[in-house]
Amino acid sequence: MIRPLLCCALLLMAADARAQEPDDTATPVSAEFVDLFSSYCLKQFPDDRALSDRAAGEGQRPLTSAEVGSFLHVDPGMGWTIAGRETSYVLTVQVPPYHACALRRYSEVPLDGAPFIEAARGFAALSGHKLAPPLMRQRDIGNGIVSSGIYFQELDEKDKPLSEAFMFFTVRYPAVARADGAPSKPFWEVRFVRQIHVPRSI
Image 1 (spheres, rainbow, N blue to C red):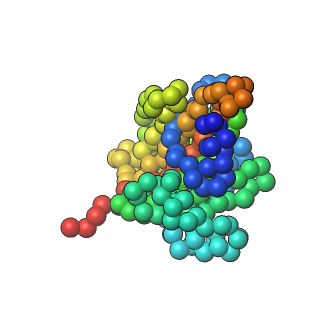
Image 2: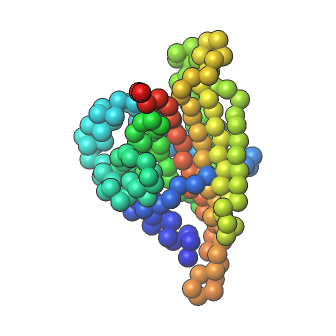
């Protein structure tokens, strides 16, 4: 029951994004996934107007306010469905104080975020920066669903932490019994995020 619900949710934009740390045997995320993230979240973000104009110009479907809320919860923002060659993706932009651009999809196999992380490292290097060693978090959120993520703080030339960070998240949903008693297959939701903390003015 859980699997068809989330598959529909991702394609219909009504999912709740969680995370799971990728394992060593996972398949690397595809070039399309990385390219879409790079073109929207690295090249256009944090210019929300440019990103929005591009999505509109490409004919990407904007998310409704309810759909945005299902991904960002109480945080304000906007989003679109992105029609890829391989699958459908969800692009969301969260507004400050945590200004974030995220791209997500679901997969029937675990996906390794190493290509995403290399793209983020290369992007930081263009400014003479680098990424700090990763911080990892994993937790059991119930019903066999395991959530975890990998967080990379950006550092300047003197290794001083900056307000920008990159995060790779996945969540594993286990096999469950369908209505006919047959087991479903486990599946994963995958998300990569570029986040900039913008302090509120006093």
